[in-house]
Image (cartoon, rainbow, N blue to C red; front, side):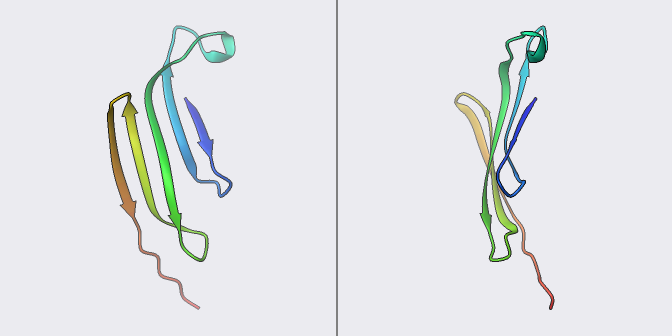
Length: 73
């Protein structure tokens, strides 16, 4: 599994692959499932909307998660 993060520490990509050997030992991972994430942030730097696109090839789906944050002084 390969994970990638943006400069805010939020995951932007997750790739799960399969092979006979781990990549560290020379195996070639074939993509099995790919997930990509896109974010919208508020003025405090917290994400308020995250769109997840997942699948392989043309079998891709997208879901958007929206969260409402309340800040207190």
